Amino acid sequence: MSVPITLFISGLADTLLSGLDTSLALLISTAFLAPLIEEFSKIFPLYYRHGETQRSIMRLAVTVGFGFGLVELITYVAVAGVPIPFRLPGLAFHPASTAIAAYGVATRKPLPYYALAVALHFSNNFLVVINPLPISASIIIVAVTVWIAWTLYHRTKEKFIV
Image (cartoon, rainbow, N blue to C red):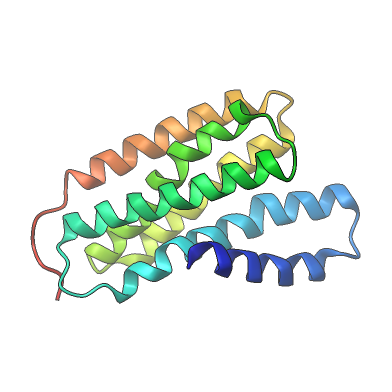
């Protein structure tokens, strides 16, 4: 569900950016719009879970994020020809950022944690776009994101969300 939502919204956004300079459109699309769209798309299915515990919501989020990251990796490698090592950080980043946003769902405070996930995603994408060594910047942001997700996961309980 997350991937089709992302593709649909991204298609609309790219249409709106079509008249801009290519570099500016890439920066806006990748650094600003992609984090908002992708984090929303990944967390959206988790709002409709019933009878779950805080911890199970986090586990589902990691699964959704990993699936999203895997589809993104395959797409970039197969369609755009990006080398696999450049896309590997996404396999850790997407599950972790989705878990951060899911912590907000699990604790009934979705907005601050969604904003945190978007900010981390923005930071990662922005540094990748402007940095001549994109994987080095990405590794730092991915490490911070994974650490935050791990910390939040350990704050959850097997308490049912009602």
